[in-house]
Length: 181
Length: 245
Image (cartoon, each protein chain N blue to C red):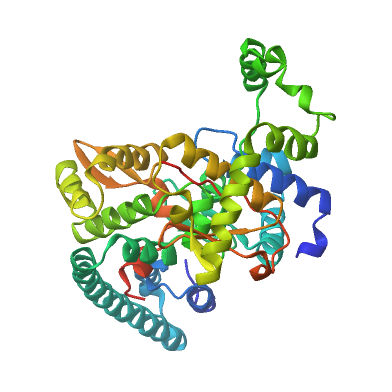
């Protein structure tokens, strides 16, 4: 498929997909269509192939619920409404994450919060989470870490409760985190 | 009104569609069983002996899908229960490093590039224009012959501030390297007053930049170590932020 897609289209798709143009990363299907033309799905698939083979990245499409959808098989209407994002496609190390600005206590806190939420139907009281974090990391860092995770969208606040955020749904394989796969 | 041939064709199309959908996805919930049953309901009054085989094949396939859906749900609910249990055990038993490692295995972050906007450039220019160039005014830069990175490193920084500390740190390091090939950064920085630690840190950065030592960062222990240059295979420089407190 990639042989039929002109290279300049792939370059353009890479730029459009990687540059952050909104508050949240990612670009909508209809925006891609307006930038790349009617055959934008073919271009995205060809770009994805190059990303996977040479860069260790991959392109995913997610619907409004944050659920990943298959770019190849999904219908055109759903793809137009979907958000397209670029994800890392290789296993990361703690060092990689630290280079990206994460501290070990922040990564551990996110892990802890997600495990807690996954075992409590995805909802938790913020004070319960604070108490849980204090048992594993320094008390002085808890509020900062919670606000960072909220700001980045890893967790969200809804009706005075904490729920799993949009970013966690996209970036984290919950079954792998739980160890059930 | 449906003829025998028309009914047969409709059933055949329905079966083909069902089989194609089945072959495309392993998820049994991708198939709308209800829609197929409704379609069959409409065709049912016109079914003759000739179409009976194909009709029963569709029903058999649909039954199989419902069975798969049941198994899938049973399996998922078991995994959910098991997952909750594992999550609670992990929370109770793991320390922060283990928890971080567990998440790392399951984490594939989003990649995005920030764009510099015109407003950001203006803000930066505004900030720069308000800065006071103390070094020029005080005349410290007279030491530097060429105003470039190498000039700064070789002449200005070394001559002005660091010479004494570089000597001190190198002497200390040579003593420590006789005992061990690896020295903990904190040991060398010492526990003296802040200025002393800061200057020793700067001296170490200078030595690392010159390739006379290697700074190695252990992400798990969150500790920095100093090694002799012969232990490095990597000829490229890498920046490490080290907090001196």
